Length: 308
Ligand SMILES: Nc1ncnc2c1ncn2[C@@H]1O[C@H](COP(=O)(O)OP(=O)(O)OP(=O)(O)O)[C@@H](O)[C@H]1O
Image (cartoon, rainbow, N blue to C red):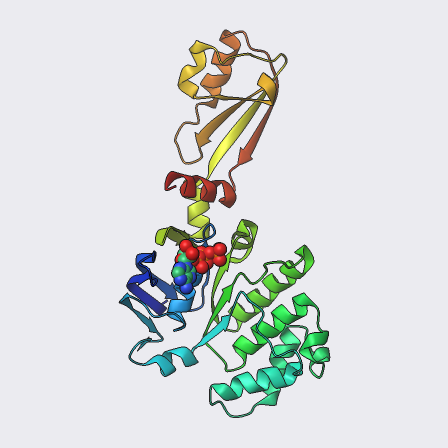
């Protein structure tokens, strides 16, 4: 695979001096789905807007399909579709005219068959002659996607595509994204929903305070950083963890009725057998045991906390 978007040492300081991006470098591979995670104000929208040419970088370079976004903006921008966070549609226009107009802005020849196909993919075809103002919020979000795809871009940026969208529609949108990927479009999305990244991304990038903390294959990330938790339910509550068990770094839970033990899934030894033996020696009676794999959410929260 080769990089379709390449960002090198990108810095963005807003007027007033606030540094929203601090020397960000990343390559986005053709055909992948990259999810950018980060808390509010991390710099996700700034990164996307800068790549799309809406925000001017303070320094650094960006290329899209080999075109420099500063010296060959039109060529770079023609390859990009952007679905913004805000709904910015003309309320009195019909769905079909909205997408037709947007395609025209990129100087593409009229091609209703292509646009109708996009509307069908997004389950909007039966609404094509409806005015935008008559659509539901979820449908308007899908019109935004259709609009962004109207000029046949190779890279699609989705900024919080499912914000404020109900669970069912969110899953529909994931299907749409999967279909787009299958048709060869590279997708970059920002999201607050970690389950969204877990469900659809090939790679996950975590941004905090204008810096990329990590960018990694999702499966590798979960295998490397995923820790397991063992929950030991006791027959009687303990007020404090016995000194003899100090090495295990256990935490009390459920008012002392449970103890939590964390171990590395990649480690050669989990330490569970010796822990169970030592629990018995310390006179603690075990009622039940449960294990739980840490989710992407646990990993993300841990990372952001570390750099807080
Ligand atoms: N036009 C601007 N002028 C000054 N500061 C700005 C401007 N736009 C954004 N910022 C600041 O830059 C930082 C990054 O904002 P950005 O919108 O990129 O974050 P984000 O990760 O997209 O957040 P959210 O998840 O809330 O959308 C924030 O501290 C924000 O206040």
